[in-house]
Length: 212
Image (cartoon, rainbow, N blue to C red; front, side, top):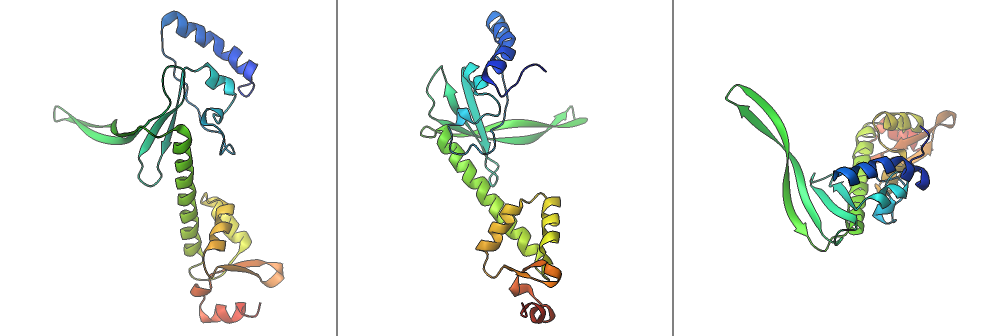
């Protein structure tokens, strides 16, 4: 509408009625947001999507990350006007089957809390999370490239389309090629570029591409 969530003054004006309501009723207000892309290295409370004024209104800002390998989550304070910042809690989201009088069976989700790391901060947790996500993305791209070049050379244009269809970033694919021994790209017929895994070439393809 008339407010812009990316401008401090506009965001504060839009949230002011909610602030008054919380003060008058004593209610706790929970806001959920995501971290903005391309903000790596900045303070975590400055990375929230939208205006920083949104975080400025909060008494406490809690950052939640999830390990892509172990599925374990980490909860840490990135801002607090009510206490210390240090310390992170580990937890997991699990499912449990509930039997109602032996007739109706439902599945419910519950939280299992793990350990507490008193030395963790929002910045250290975010750095570890980004490293894990990057590592997982790189391995996914490498596995994907090995699979699609396992039998024959593939034109670059076709490989790009396949990667886009399967949600694989092209930048990750290029990095996977550069760090995987043997992978290369060469000019082919009609100015096309082909991606090659020499270890997977059959003899006929090997003879053809050795000409380039």
